[in-house]
Image (cartoon, rainbow, N blue to C red; front, side):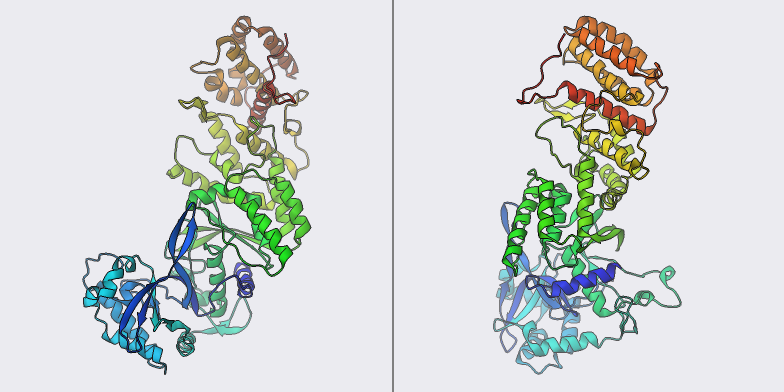
Length: 637
């Protein structure tokens, strides 16, 4: 299903005039220089082929992406050479880096020369004869003495590909050379079997294409399909014959997936822990993917993983479609810059402009040695995905602590709350946490399923261990119970019981305080907030350790062990505070709401989440703002 969907998307890309992708037998690769030859095979010049690319606020030069003969899959001590396009070690015999082996470049040039001359010798073309003459006469041991090479030596050894020009003309554009390459490529021995994707009898691909761009995978590429151990063979079939996929399909799906993971794709990949997410629609319209990117709000993953923001604009066929695509692109750019977006308004725009029944695909990939692991592959009509993502945001809705907090909490921010603020995002703890939770969390959002229990436990764990800390400037650096954590606990409990139809905590899972709800966990959470406020009113803000720092974890898990002590302390606080009588009456009202008139000996994990919500709601109610935006004054006596 994955290969079939990717191959179908490859067919869509081939029809898109704004997308440059490689045909079967070719690869789209970065090329930094052209070795310009005369018709006699003499080296005239080396032409840089860099193109300017916007990277953040800077413009940098990057090798040009070009369609070249399909590059080989290299392994071992003596890698195979490519045809008419390769690194400087192969084309000129100059290694990309300093090698202890003095014969390193020489061996590679000799392999490149033999391979290319063998193919070009069958071509009756002056351009082919010029390249052959150069390869026969070039001496890699004296290459650095050539003034043309010496001038460009620093950039030549940077590790990108070189191609050949003859009298300023691209040698690969010669139709006779192209035909010779295609005859050579298709003439390679291959088993003919029935392709699993097309159902036709075709030559089967032995080694599937390398996929580049998956986070933390090998830079040389990893394979979505591979068989490299005896345990993977069946009925005596080795390598690609285990799951026969034709060369045509293998090349096509590889091109499509590499495009989705590349910077050429305007709809950037999304990172969740070790999972790299790509997405596409069954239609050539780019607005589906642009809207999906915006819905998931992945601006922080993009900046963290790549450290840059880049927008690629194409040319549309229909004016109206292009106008709306531009609007959505502006919205996506605002998301990348951290600006607030009204997703409900965007959803209306999508429903009015796009067909919600268009099939949409989401693929999550993770590195696994030299292979790629499929974390998830989901396909639904686009409208279903949009509705599920909006349901995710609706479930998270809760009263804000501050007006400038985001209305729509991105999945990345929730995952970030599972990690101690004292560690950096490069630490192993972060990678370990996210690798276990990121893919499962993403899947639950897109399928509408309950959130993973591990994520709920991780958020509670951080609440137990974190303390309220401020920086030297007085700004909050670490908050034990904040807007994002409370919102997630609420959403988790809503989704956990949604399919059962009977949520025992429904009245606690509201936007703001529910003063009539009498569940002990919720009431005790409110009571703890009142006690904390009474302490602050009596002692002031400069407290070394508040009752939240000392007792919150125990009060949340085993109320009977803590609350009697806190109530005894409360008598001293209310007697000392200016408005102590108000707090004393509030404490008594909450104690009267306890149905059993006793403190529970323990609370379940679900009840602990309700306890936190009760605390958060009550604390938010203390500092609720009036309609005119001013902070509420002290309670009345």
